Image 1: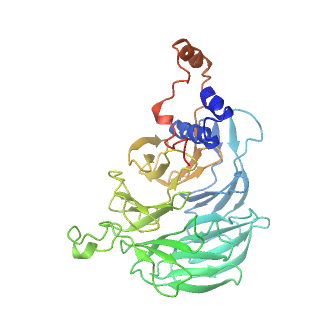
Image 2: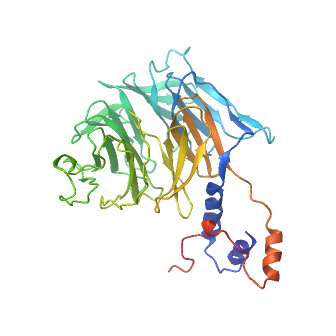
Image 3: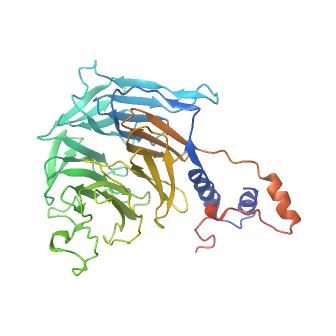
Length: 400
C-alpha cells in the first residue's frame, strides 16, 4: 500500500492504479459479515435486489411473497455490529401490493424518488418512493419476468420488458404507454438488459436459446443473434445454429464499460461475448450450475483489474475471473438456493438473496498494517513492498 502511495505521489504510477489494486484486493477478500444483519422482512424467497447509484445508500428487494422492501445500508449507529434497517415496505396490507411474485425491482437511474417493479401478476408498476403508491401501472397479457431501464439514456425514457410473450415490449415513462415491440424471439423473454455504453442498444435472452442484440432506433429486426459457434456450421447441429446456449438463455449482464456481455443458460454454461461484434470470446468458466426456470440475476464487479463475476450457484455465490474463467472462490452462507446478488461498487461489497428469505452481506476483510513488511523489504535492499501477484494491477502504467 505504501509503495502504491509513494509511486502515485511521485508521478511514477497512473492515479487509478492504486484504486484498482485496492478494489481488487477487497473483492478477493470478501467474506460473510456476521456483524451486519439485513432486517428479515420477506416471508418467502427473495428474487431481486438493486442498490441505487446516487448515494449508494438504499437497497430495494422484491420477493416471492409480492412484498417490496427499501433498506438503509448506512451504519448510522457507528457501532461494529449493526443492522441494515427497513426504511419502508410495500407489504401485504397495502392495497397497491403485487398480488404474486415480484421478479425485478430497479431504482430510477437518476433519482431515488422513483423505482419500478414487475411481477407475475402481469403488471409493471412505477412507484413514488415518498408515498409508496404507483404513479403509473402497465398491464400485460402474461407473467412479467423482467424489465430494465437504461442507466445512461438521455434521449429516451424507455423500459424494456420481458414477458411470457415472445415479443419484447418497450414502455415509455413519459407517455405512460407501450410504444413499440421487438419481434424475433420464439419463446418467453427471461432477461433484458440495456447497454451501459450506448443508450439505444438492448440485449434480450429467451427460452428459445437465443440472445439477440437490438438497436431500438431501427424499425427492422435485431442487429445480430449471438452464436456460440461463431458461425462455424460444422460444429453446430441444425437446431443449434445461431443459439447462445443449448438450453434456455436466462441471464444477461454487461460489463461496466459495456464492451462485453455475459450470458447464462440452463446448459450450465456462462459465456462472454464481444458486445460490438457478437463474437464468442470462448472463455471457459467450466460448469456453472443453473437450474433456474426464471431469469438468473448475477452481477459483475467494477473498477477492479481484473474484473470478477458473481453468479448464484445452488446455495452459494460463485466468483469467477471475468476474462480468465477461473473459479476464484465460493461464497457460502445461505441455507437454500441463492436467486440474486448485487455488487456495491462504492465499497466493493456484495449482497445476496435467496429462498431462505435472508439477505446476506459479503464484506472485504480489513487490510492489515503493512509497515513491518515495508521495513523488512527495505532491509533486503528492495525499493517496493512485496505485493501478492493476485493483487497486481493488470493495466500498464505507461499507456499512451
